[in-house]
Structure formats: structure tokens, C-alpha cells
Length: 467
Ligand SMILES: Cc1ncc(COP(=O)(O)O)c(C=O)c1O
Image 1 (spheres, rainbow, N blue to C red):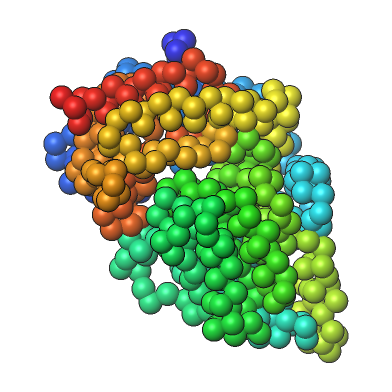
Image 2 (cartoon, protein in one colour; image 1 turned 135 degrees about the horizontal axis):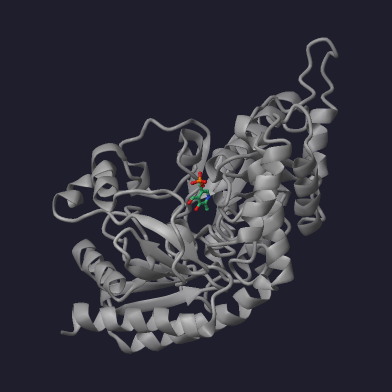
């Protein structure tokens, strides 16, 4: 990485001490800092990052949670944001701003069957808006009276706020946060490697999708207003449903007038080799939520996008004009930050200009091909993914599919880091089942960089399990 001048003067030891004393990190047991120092990232360029001690890494996670889609060091985003901030930094959604209008138009260009875009500032919030739209619609519309429940899938993650967590199917992530909100209904996941029905693809009847109807009937179709899914499950272990899955799920949802929400928070903006993750399937969602890659995390921004008929439920509230609620009674202060909206416009422009969705498809195929080679090691139970979004499930025993231990996984992760590459993993999501390593580099990644990533993982596997 080319040496850059830091924009702040600091003493590295002081910052490290300050981190330990002041900062509460997410997903981190702080006891680990008794024996090791927290890594502090100070610079980034493309896929490369440098820490405060001068160590360099190739980041195969797009910033830890798959969100810096266009890579680090994008001056054009910084410049566009700076110019907009000088002109007009903020106005709440009660009025329009130029970047808000332009970004809404751009998002709808990518979702031509949809009608309206609501901005907020995190993936959790985007999903909360979707749930609130469903609940409020069920309150004001004669056709949807009482349809307030949301269905969600085991192993999917939809966010950290209590509504989003109530719709998250990861036991360990939910632990200790109950009681959860009423009106959320779980159904089984759909990963063939650990089929919840003990079936095998090819000889099954896509039971994982068809059985959702039984769940709906048991729960009462008149009470269910929405069904949320991740097109390809991310934090739950890179789970890609088979091609028949979503068309079946969509037909079931249509039959019972249930709005299908695609949570594109991770998969959107080219991550899987198509602009939207759901485009790998013949499916047409009623709502789409997005966040991480929307502004490539150069700003905090999310959006909830709905079909026009959903918006019209609010517009055409048939109640008494004096008391009716013919608008979505919701607010997002930071949905009006023009810096994030401008960052998103520029990030999408980069994705288009540099054909990054195509790069994700081509280099993503190469990544999967290279990861497949790691099956030569007995500890590799499964390799799966789509585009630049892949995972390896590590096991102790290929036959029984017993996962490797948490300790084994931690040692392996540290060994990859020691090779100079940052990769991700399922992190405290399922008791005893957090053994899936994931790869989601920026969409600019090259085949050479893929070779470096896979080489580091192979070396780490050998050092950890085959010394
Ligand atoms: C699929 C999915 N949806 C929603 C969220 C929540 O997004 P945020 O952390 O921005 O609230 C995440 C976060 O990882 C996610 O993976």
C-alpha cells in the first residue's frame, strides 16, 4: 500500500490505551484484551488496510461486515460528500433534498417494479420500517385488517433492534434479550448441507419451501401480513436456497396475500454477481430493504422500497377524513443526511462505471472454484456461495458433519490473520455451530488477490490442523 499521510497526529500507544479504556466494541469479549492488543485500522486503499502498528492486511470482508462494496480510498466519494456538505448538509424527510430525490430515482431505476423509497440509516431500521408498514397497513386497510404478523426463517438475521431481533432466527444472537415482540413466526431454514427435513436435493419435493404453507395455515393466514427472507443468508452461514425455493415461497405468499420482503442488506449492489441477490431466482418481492452496500459504508444509510400498491394503502386510507392516517406515520432523523445520500449516488455510479457487478460474477466464480480446491482437506465439510459471497463450513468429521470446536475455529481465524488476510466467520450465531468462514471482498477484487486469500486460508488450515 502506498504510504499515506495521516490526517491526525496521534501517539499509537495512547490510542491503543484509549481504545481499551473507552471503547465498547461490538461482538467482542473484552477479556481478550488482557492478553492481546486491539487492532486499530488507520488506512485503507482498495482492499488493503493498514493497522496502527504498520501491519498490512488484505481485507476479504469489505470492512468486517461486507459493506465497503467499492473498496477503500475512493476520493470521488469524499469529494462529492464534501461539496454537498458545504452546500446543504441536512434536512429531515418532511421536505425533499436534491440527493434524496436523485437517489430515490436511482434506486427505482434498479427496481423498476417498485414505486416508493423510504430512507433511514441502518439495515435494522430499514427492516423495522417494513414491519411498521405492514402493521400500519393492517390497521388502516379493510383488505388487510388483522394481517400484522411477520414470518421469518431460522438462521436468517435481520438486525439488532428488538423488532428486527424478534424476526431473527439465530438462537445465540437472541440469547438474553427476551421477551421478544409478539407477532413474529419462525419457519425452518433451507440449507441442503443440513436439511431440516433430512432430505436430499434431487429426491426431495423442496419441502423447505412447501412446508411454509403448513406453518401459515397453523398460524392463521388472516393474521400474517409479511414474510422476510435474506435472498442468500449471510451471517447464518452463506446459505443459498435451491432455484425452485423462492418461486414456491412467492406463490404461497401470493395465495394468502402476504407481502414478501427481500432483505438485500448484504446481497444488494452486486455482492452476489447480480445487482440484487433475488435476481438469481424467478421471484418478484413486494418490498426490498437495503443498507450496507447502498453507500458502500462511506455514510450510514438504508432504504425500504415498496411496490406502489403498498404505498397506495396509505394514500387511500378510507377512514373518516378528520381522523384518518393517510400517511406512513414514521420518522428517521438521519435518513435526511445528505452526506450519506450523496455517498450512495457516487458509489452506485462507480459500480456502474467500473462494471463491478460483472466483476463480482466473474471473479466470484473464480473464488468459488479456488475454494472448492480446499476440499482436499478433511476439515472442509462444505464450500458454497454465489458471486463474491462465499463460505467454507469446517467440520471435525465429514461423515457426521460434526462442526469443529469454537476453539478450533478461533485458532484457525487467528492463523489466517497471521497470514496477512482478514476473513469473516459466523460469530456467536448458533450454539456449537459457528464454524463457517466467509469471504466477501470488495467488488473490485482481482484474481491475483483471490489467490492470495485462498493461499492464506490453505496455509492456515495446514498450520492449525495438519502440523
Ligand atoms: C441481512 C441483514 N439484514 C439486516 C442487518 C442489520 O443491519 P445493521 O447492522 O445496519 O442494522 C444485517 C447486519 O449484518 C444483515 O446482515
